[in-house]
Image (cartoon, rainbow, N blue to C red; front, side, top):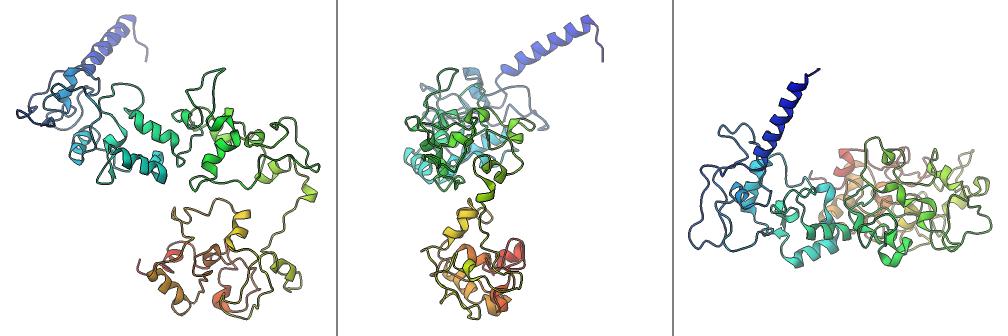
Length: 427
């Protein structure tokens, strides 16, 4: 649409006047006042962000920080006190929801630092983040912060976010201090952990909150390894930065930006993870044995493959795990060596590798009679092999113990709801 010059000028003038009205509106009619001596200012009776018909917001912003904006939420400003972030109070939630009714209590689930148990403990000790153990609007937001461009987020909440191992700081320009001692600028970007990049990465990646990596760091590559020049070493040793370029992940994650094309900010783009490994390792001499291939072409068991995990050849005709022995104390160590990242929060976001409750234990002990599937435990604990059958189809001769060998993910129970109800039989 083509507008004449006078029409454009009139439109600009209208927008300017419209913006001034939005920034500072009159005190709304119907706002209540505090009783004399009241310790806490009462919330306003009517929200100035809702018009008389309740159909839409007026063009006013209650968080400017000026005295005239107090009445947006309060009947009267707190007398003789400087505005500060109020203690979390469930009754004040209604004030926030007048203007933000679409935001639920879990809207910050993807940016929740309190998943980290240490951060949760720090917040509880501070005493000004939770109300009855619940996170509320003012747990994270300071309604008196003004238009600071950071969603009115509290500074002490940000400090917890930067220390939380449960938040991913990559591709996030709000969490620079997760890795840096101070806001980084060109030419000056001091790192935490005394500048040790490996310790900095492993602060999260050696915890239960981030995916670990099976590749060692802090070692000198062997003579059989050829490191390309664009994969730098530090003091002739491998570091996390040898493969990853942390400069690539600065800034926000965009839909079509570098984060989507190179989410792990690797120094080279390759067609697969193994292809990246073979930039340094010689592919012909670095082939990993697949311990799940346990039969030869004639259908006979390859006993050498059995001994990859077992301390002695198991009796495939014996039912139950009592006579099965392993080389290591915890057989899950075999699994996570090739399948890292599934030790915690798996499946369905819940950690299952533990001793089952009496109720779950009763379901596991009766699984063969109820559903015809064995769900073996190891020393009374749930292990990877409780849900996944690590054997090749045809190795195990007893049907309840062989279930799952024919499926792609080796699941003993059918994927979906049945996978859960085998143990959670009351669901």
